[in-house]
Amino acid sequence: MTLFIEQCLNGLQFGLLLFMLAAGLTLVFGIMDLVNLAHGSLYMLGAYFAATFAAWTGSFVLGAVMALGATLLVGMAVEVIAMRRLYGRDHLDHVLATFGLILFFDELVRLIWGAGGMSLPLPSWLNTSIRILPGVDYSAYKLSIIVVSLVVAAFLYWLVMRTRIGMLIRAGASNREMVGALGVNIKLLFTLVFGLGAALAGLAGLMQAPILTVQIGMGENILILAFVITVIGGIGSIRGAFVAAIMVGLIDTLGRAYFTDLLRLAFSKETAATAAPALSSMLIYLLMAIVLVMRPEGLFPASGK
Amino acid sequence: MTAKFNLNTAVGVAILIALLLLPLYVELTGSRFLLTLFTRIVILSIAAVSLNLILGYGGMMSFGHAAYLGIGGYAVGILAFEGITSGFVQWPIALLVSALFALVIGALSLRTRGVYFIMITLAFAQMAYYIVAGLARYGGDDGLTIEKRSQFFQPLNLSNKTQFYYLCVTLLVASMYLVWRIVNSRFGMTIQGARSNDTRMRAIGFPTYRYKLVCFVIAGTLCGLAGALLANHTDFVSPAMMYWTRSGDLIIMVVLGGMGSIFGPLFGAVALLVLEEVLSGITEYWQIILGPLLLLVVLFARGGIDGLLGKVRRKVQHG
Picture 1 (tube, each protein chain N blue to C red):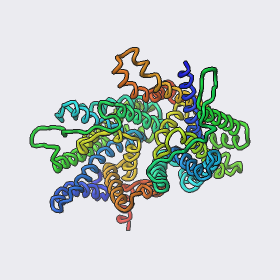
Picture 2: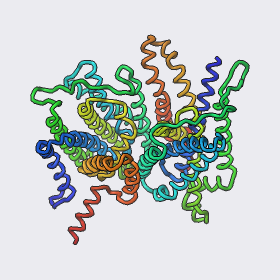
Picture 3: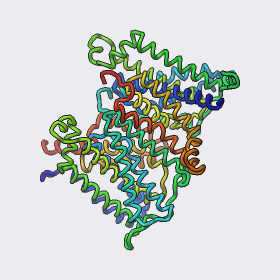
Picture 4: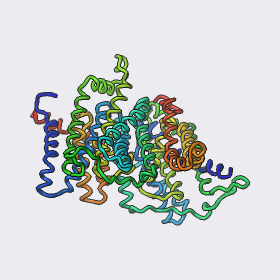
């Protein structure tokens, strides 16, 4: 039971982390109608920046904050240099151009930081476990990821639904030209939104960095998961991304943890042991297939799309 | 299709002739490396030709096309591992499995459109990638070495590099001919009609979903053939064959060459792979050049090489 609670928390933590990525992706798609494959590169950059700055300043928190700012800047620069020219173009153009950006960033990272990975050591005050329930200990760092993610999710909700900028963002999503015609600096708005998405990706990357190694291509696998989430949740919907991210996080983590045992009930020990790893990594794609069969527009289709 | 002189076709035919003459050049200069490189180019051209059928003519932006390369390759690899080396068994099974995969993926994915279609095909291809990576018996992540290439009737010996090369070129020409016949048939017209306006095609009575699905399956099967060839070429299959960046490479080839043209994929495959070869000779960090180059192609040379050739032709004709 203790283990089960721990696994559920792991799933929740992974789901929330995925939400950070998916939120940026879905925000950029919902508002700029832009498919950004290079989102994973920003995730990777966030992790590399954090590892570098943390080593440089000697402080994990300071490094994280600086990394966040740096990814925000990189995101805005990418928007101004490349993305801006792609709005209104075919989705295939987006895919190709951002694929080119992935190649560029992967190689740039290899050029600057080398091909070997990096690690981001945790400070001792995070590297402990906390007793969350009687008899249940949980990693303080993972718990802090959950807290930070929930705060960011709440902040996003507040930003998009309760502020003037959020109102402009939502208006821009439903009718770009009209918002521009009303005298809003739509270019600046788009740059900011893209930067925000980049910062979210960077935040996800730097939070994941201490758990996994920081390496080239780390953004690519997780990017696909973020795509699956945006598709399940309905492209352009932040609420959908949140629900889908938690679902995917839980299913993926629990699937990996318990699928072998589940299969063992029906099949022989050997069959279960060989089939389980492949099948459990399929689970989320199955979920996506089922959702798309039932609701081709995702669980929470964004209005006006 | 027009009797008039057509630069695109002329260049395409010239490339094909050059491909046919390449082994001669290799014999004369002894650079076996070129033959290996161009065998790869020809095989990936077949894959690009198949992608062009759905992407260029059908408007279906599949981002999971490399999955069929892997499936075709693994069909050959797994059968060889289990001791079945006859090409007459391996290849039909490779095609059949690719077709079945395409049928299932297509049936689900074609319910969606636009960016959903891109992402769902991508996700399904990744699913196939993880399944293959989880096959511990067949090497899992590390891949599977193929001890013996596919066996056919006697004079044809795939282990002979020149023979294998000519087999690939023959299959490339055959697949280009197949696509040409398809797009100029009633079926192909329906597919292209559905690309321009799906609603209208349905309104005049075409069940476009079924047409597109059949087209999707044909493309998947053809790419499965390329996978079977690729496995025989490298004597090795690994999940990396079907990683999503490989699907990206195929899309680049099609777009770089020019979408919806018969020779486009060939131009694109030759251009991209030769460019890779040249750039990697210049610097270890060649992707740092290739990436922005792609961006520039997207921004400024939308029609690809085929479009550029068309422009040159028009300039020449009109002075």
